[in-house]
Length: 443
Image (tube, rainbow, N blue to C red; front, side):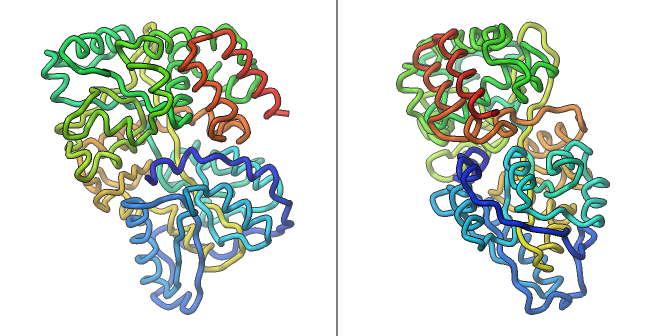
């Protein structure tokens, strides 16, 4: 599934050789289309990403619109096996990068920019981003004060999804607003006959980092969240123990999550299927807004907004509501003129509207000029508006900002350490291993 695009390991970045690039991007469009139908006639460009299925269909629609208005010819290719990092690293290392790559980790953007492997956007493209997005989104695509990449889409990662029928059968009319309420309701759902009330997709380690980040954000606060993100405080800090102990209240309770040893083998898509398939075995699954893209087809006949509903990640110890976000960014790896203009178009509201309005795409946009009416369902529209309304008052995915060796590699670093914690529940040992791995990665 394309939703896993945000979490593929980027260890290949560390070993790719430096390709010397100089200068900056050329001409740009306004963000709403460039040229008069033939300005770029005969010019082609390539794009590498991880999107498949409905996401790929939506992105191809954006390319088609751009090509029609400019005469260019863009080709999108999803990385083989979903391993964009490996494919991209190999292409860059071999001196044949795609014209554009879609990157989801600000840490990866910084790594490529620091080695002069990507080009800054033009001043006109920068103005499109500055005028249509909260400034923090432009900052996330920047390095040393210079913008290299444009925001394409966003995910609200502070969402919990639930099966409305299972809640009704258990007599729960209002979704939980606090951590104790979540635990209480899950026990009530268990008593109603649901075998595993909370479905945890521990087989994909990134889901566990998202759990931790939301709990840590609510127990430690934004300042410490950012400090831990930058490794300015160690993972042995008492604040980490507080968050892990809170997580253990759910992860360590077999009545709520079933066998932790089994949960650690459940992939993300299966964790969603468990809640929304024809005969569900679970009632709650925590993950981002892109859960909606998995609730499709014969396996998951649930309808978003009716059968599949969502509530904000619950408050812990009276914490105020806060949004954790993630997103994808378009970055230029060559000076291809058509690609440069496509990035400007991609940053604008016209492209974003196409992305969110294509059925089955699951895309959200934080472009201020995208109308709620563009979305195919009211739940997605509301989640997007919630993110637009907070402006710069959000935090970005912690592991996405970390060095890839720690925050973005399957079965290693933070991913692997939290998988071990899910199985063992050993707080002290987990903290020590997390700090050991982080210290090595942040050198």
